[in-house]
Image 1 (tube, one colour):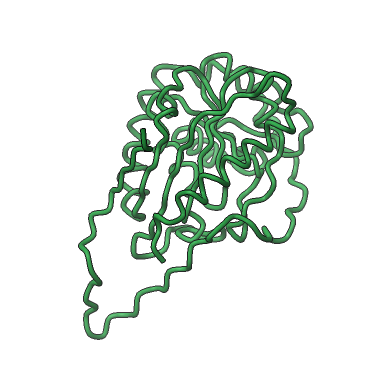
Image 2 (tube, rainbow, N blue to C red):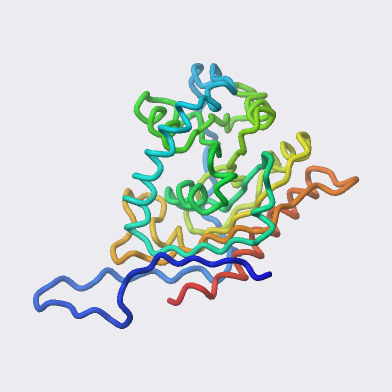
Length: 278
């Protein structure tokens, strides 16, 4: 069975006429043909996360009231804002609809559009309680950033220093039935090229014996690159490609599993790049 596709474009075919005296449209950057290549200057070591980011428990993410409020806010934010600024196409492997238990969702990361694109692109059973891993040293430093990311993205803090400030929370969330969205590169790419995956997501899935759902985001960097606060004009095209779930093999270690996960995301990107016409 072929992957299902959904395109929300409602623009008329053919070039639109420009009124006399109107400014010329902003040129659209060419979407990367592949994720290979330099990823930009290496990121400096992140600061230590705030102490309060380590005080959250799994119960915070499973309250029915939070689910209802989050669903309303996500509908307003994703459909009312995000989907009105881009032209998106969803491609979902039928096997992804078979994931009925908890899982780890992984994706390439190059834009602030990435989390809303993934959360509104994966099957509903996954997205309903999907919690997004965010940098504790950035999103949990002020009350308004913490409030917004937890409300919209069901965010849980990730200590990028690896010093254990939030150790154990991700496993507790999976044990409580909360799927996790993790960006294994650790930070947004400056160039759109994908950095090597860190082994954390693979190790977590291996330790908890849950499947990994790979997602490739194509065109998100060009639609809203790092350093910008709003998508480019003209509703730039973006493809969200959701692949078949991956499980660790019998004697596979975390490094080998991580390599397969990264390869799956790259393969999804290459297989669906043609859907965006430059």
